[in-house]
Image 1 (tube, rainbow, N blue to C red):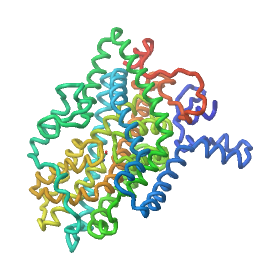
Image 2 (tube, rainbow, N blue to C red):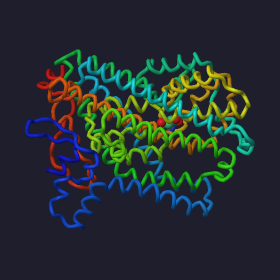
Image 3 (tube, rainbow, N blue to C red):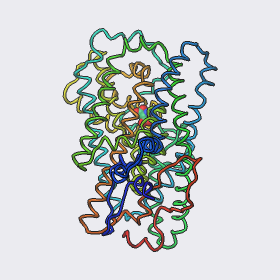
Image 4 (cartoon, rainbow, N blue to C red):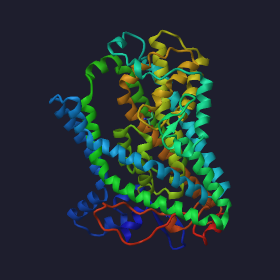
Length: 514
Ligand code: ASP
């Protein structure tokens, strides 16, 4: 089916070579089809159907704002707000439910199906990209805060009620890093599914970092087993595929959930006017920083390396970006992000399912940026001048602490104390950051997940280039055509053709990836 082929993001020419299509074509329009005499109504219908989910998601955000503003006047009590926000809460629950099977299965099957040398190379490039972009984002944060100076002047910090109870405990920088390493090596795998180690002892909260490390090591070990490991590899592949089908169903619920998440937040907001009057400059600083990084820097890096249009790439991510905005959680956005990059941006499953879970956990450009703004802001509030060494310390610790931040709402604020401790700034002012974090965290999460997606796009480019140079049709991390291509997602109400698509190596293909 022509449409299907296009939305899978790839085509094969007569020589059998694979070419990636421009992502915009994922909307169902091909140059060929455009020229085929089609009535305007038919064309509009096809475009609308091809982009239904994007249209629904964007409308959901706008409608959510309108409904929120309208319902706000009704002055609901706390219980009524909970009822009102229930459809949104449901979306977050559904997405969270899928995280553990998704992360574990995709990484086990990903690591098992890629040659360890290629895995190391891919991982190395991804880490380099993540590190460089996070450092750039931190630098943008510092520069913004030094230019706008949100903490100097009469910024009315006292107007904002301190939220003393929520302030994370300050702890030694070295302890923070030991905890990060403790999380990497969970003492109990089952417990890691619901406990992490933020302060020397286990507390509630999923330890995704630990699960990621175990799943990857397990995948590599499975591959070592050779034939003996194949049954288990198939098991994880099927588990992974079935999980992605669940994700595709959840995806169609996302617009409704996002609408209510946004609306409920607007309804329960405190007096926004006062918030902006006191901390407006800080909010602006973070948001401008996020916009510069997300709309200029990341697209520029992508363009310079791939020579492809980065905004078309971004367009393919709209549903995932709106989910990040609505949920403030990179982890909860992960399932939809995988779908988007695979189906709209032509990233192969092996790349997306290997790199996105890692990115969602360790790569947080948005968090690093806002943490730098927050650190400089707090220094300015307390009239503590920062010297060059302290600024470099902020950059480095923000980059490191963003790795330790969990992909959950306010995950970044929890690790902010590490930076403040490192440069000797008071931690009590974190209450101010917390007061507006519900807002800043949204753009922050959008940038966090955008960075992961660009990382996946660049790795795909790297793999394509390598395979071209080495004269092989498919690179070492690709296993076969059907393996690389993702099916476009339709409404679960539409019928799906009965085709079975299995990711990962089949026994006959295993050798080709060595
Ligand atoms: N909410 C962010 C995320 O999930 C983490 C943060 O607070 O910076 O990516």
